[in-house]
Length: 395
Length: 98
Image 1 (tube, rainbow over the protein chains, first blue to last red):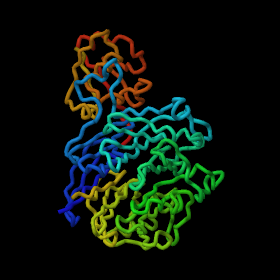
Image 2 (cartoon, chains in turn brown, blue):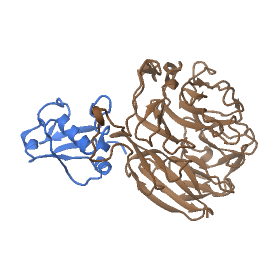
Image 3 (cartoon, chains in turn yellow, cyan):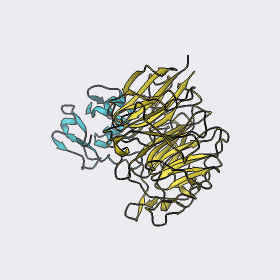
Image 4 (tube, rainbow over the protein chains, first blue to last red):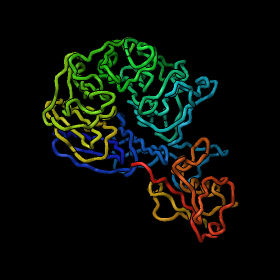
């Protein structure tokens, strides 16, 4: 019987929640890496036993963890203990937590500063990996979105990382600036129908697209309007929170921006607002139903100054028409005194029939719906603050 | 034999419990000890010193013999009591945050 494995990253460790296809009874394992921040945990679509995790700390920096057995055991995919850290000729071996910006003339043009909060230019400084996106076809290939914003790729199972420097180097980098959470590349979307195409999103710069496997990039922010920046329709500078697509219709993307829910039908060449009747169009998460490309989910948050649901009611909103017309989904969710937040990487869908929807809160709850959002129940209630939720649908 | 005490998070990362004991072939300094530590436990590379700059991470400090060595030169000789193994070199994480 098929089942699901929910991968949860929290402020104090990772948790793995498993269930059969009914998604009614759950086993909980963890905390894995107790005490560390797990910004993101994601499985390979090509090999569900392969899982990557971003383990990070303000004290100790970045660590990459990998499991080859579905999360039962983990290791850092760099040099094994006891082996020399240098190879023949003294060259350093791959190191799984080494993310070094490419400043070579050859690849990306030396780009060393971006705009800071005060408007001055500030050096690029690596802080952490926000998002790990495994390749759709190769378990050993994985992309990492990092703060300060850049895109890295590993083709050796996370042992070593190379920056795809064309993104930072394409020309608008000096205009990027950090959002309140830092200047992070938080979203990476791959296109199953076109292996050359990659979408990324950066706060606060916007969305970008590559059509040549990450060599060259261009901003795709036409149609976005952000009243809080000097030119609301600028080419870059927008605080995009999350983008999502349905694999069957990869030119249609949905975006939760700082404010505004947006849609494009031409792979980002132009966007239109589809916030419609949402009670507020601020929020972080957005996702698409596994089998219905026009069914979209968001969780409205009151405002940028008040990161909790309006009126203390935790409501998922679903549109079955690709935006504009939204219905509140409340059954099983707290409808009073609820003041949690749902962070940008903390919603996911499985591919069972009916489609399962999952999200985690800063209050430590992970909610699941086994019927596309009609009914909800908490899988767990008291985890540390949830940073990310991903789902693997298992055969 | 140099004794090193790691903060709990790094002990977990290195899969060790208690103190670490290291043979250091050269003049024992903070740099030499951390070099030896990273050689024995490669998973600690980048967690005590920045990969690129080799600077101590801001929320970590080095102590020994009730002295804060964090702002000494990393190439300064360690105290005799550390070199002899009587006292450990302490790598301490700041007590801050959640």
